[in-house]
Picture (cartoon, rainbow, N blue to C red):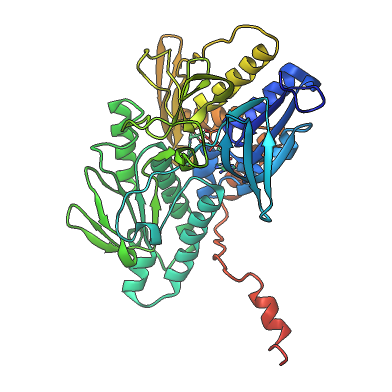
Length: 456
Ligand SMILES: Cc1cc2nc3c(=O)[nH]c(=O)nc-3n(C[C@H](O)[C@H](O)[C@H](O)COP(=O)(O)OP(=O)(O)OC[C@H]3O[C@@H](n4cnc5c(N)ncnc54)[C@H](O)[C@@H]3O)c2cc1C
């Protein structure tokens, strides 16, 4: 073996998300100090996305939905920088650091866990006015905007401005989008008790989806339950509806509706990290057939990546950027892009690299779906659990408790788990915070003003 780091195999992990962090920590457990591990990520932390809807509603402090990589992976080298290319033929990865340095990092084993990005459609005005809901900065910005708008709307006399400020549009009613709007509406209803000048009928939440239902992952009965929940709470759910344009923050939809809005949150699906499709930078081919495989790395069941001429024995992948056969659901099925699979694929990759180092045969990835749970605001939730052949459907408080418990168990690091529990206790006792810190493009503005005019 071409060992690089003092005779030890060097495992280079691209992306410190669900796949990357799990692979790195399991590898450390299985090979101890007999392996050198490097994790490269443009962010110095893992974003625990299942908690983002609760960050967006103020039930969880934003920092507590993040796991700092250097703390979670002691003994592992963490490089904060953007991966810009992979030359698997030379076993080299190109990385650009924050301050613009170009690095070339060699490896014995490569793990690609570069995740996904929002899948945008060419809707006029979308790129200019909408915001995603995939990263903590976005969840914080959505919450701050909504709360800041309540304060502004309560003070304005102009009815049109007030209407615009209090109209919040969410596009995409899958799990991430459905949870995000439900949590945000719950936060607003809670906050309105402090706004005697505003009434709940002044606030308009609109959820738009092209499909005839929301939450496609659950049963028909549960979809209907979630839809009723949202509609009873006043969320206007537009199904089988397309957004035609959102120029100048005016949303025009295929049902001939047209309205001004101050917030457009885009949650209509993800696509694999586009870096992988850049064939000049990345010499491993991705799948090009249309559909859920498009742009993904093709994996064998043991999670080795397929190159142009067959399996690459030293390159593994998993998570949102990989097409992984779902052996538990049938040969032709692919694992859906979720954290449940990403974490378990990370574990399988770590074990298979350990096996490869030790000259043992690799094992195929097999994971039976355990179900899925969503929170829909405080004390509200829905979803199902699969225990063996038993399917248990939950709604309301039990589902909310199960969703929180499941996500807490899977949140990395004990410290963060404890901090999240503390956030929940605090928001249950003293209600959620209602301050929206307005986004400032010049946080030094007040200081500069205090310093007085610049001397010429
Ligand atoms: C709002 C929301 C809620 C969700 N809720 C759930 C849920 O309840 N249950 C569930 O199972 N799943 C949920 N998911 C999906 C789940 O979060 C993802 O499927 C999972 O995180 C995928 O793991 P990954 O390792 O493939 O990617 P990620 O965890 O996204 O990690 C990818 C990493 O790669 C890094 N990266 C990307 N490009 C570069 C580059 N060029 N250079 C360096 N680093 C780079 C990123 O910074 C990131 O850290 C949710 C997703 C969202 C957005």
